[in-house]
Image (tube, rainbow, N blue to C red):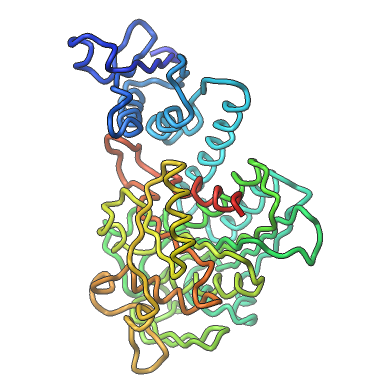
Length: 431
């Protein structure tokens, strides 16, 4: 194929019977996607066609023709882009629309690329610094940041991040980044974003299988999504004060690693018995949520590749949403629909806090059954709800079931997807 191929969208209903037999057709260096635009799922069909086109060896895609609206073009971009081709799409339309799509593609490319990094390339402090550098580049005058690292975490009482990460040669860290376009120290914080940044997850002493560990470079996908969401919102004109909190660590095995039956006592007094060292995400996020609460924001959003149970429940096609604030959950679902990011709400009640009991502490971090037992994703969210203010009002938890694919399929290339970025960015802009 040529270095740049033109892609034209054709309405299936305008074709003869022979043409309707093929989703993608080629004429010289021009490719045509044939779908009925009144079908129930045109975006899925376009994404599927884009994946087929990329597999043909097309290096760069140029979208041409009046049928390409913004949603269709974005669906194509999600299907076509892949490792080493994360920005290889030239959009069609007027300058403002093309610029908006290019901004979105650039942010998704950054977040997907950093999630695809190997754990040796991206230890915890490097992840935190990469997020600071990228977001600062969007708006240098309005961003400040501090990173608490290593033993200083324990001294300041951030017991979750410290204990999960202390077994690694690479120190854990907690990032607090402040985007404040007013430049006034007394400006209220509109939203705090909290991301799970486990740069590699061996499972600790509750060690994963080889197959289960293979894709665990992606366990910092939550950090990438919330950092990307803030960057995208800034590019789109965010004028609210937002804080980004990343909880970064490697979950490794060593003589210094945290152990089963250890008890951690958090800053809010909640004690937690470690029932499973592989349920480390909720342990680090608890610190992040406590730090977020200190800013008294109107909204707290956390995002994490938290549970295999959410993947089992959604098939990995949806982000799982949990909240004790149904009005806010409804807003999140509406926002996700508007940006065509699949989102599905799973059960969460206050009594889910008691689903991981301990005889020695206020709670355990999980159960000793495989996968945390029945309702594992809701139980994990219940654990997190112990660490949010206002009885959960203003809090959303995104369990990123669809954040990463270990292998490609008919719709996605292998690697990170970036799903969740657009939804969270739009929630920030709607404040």
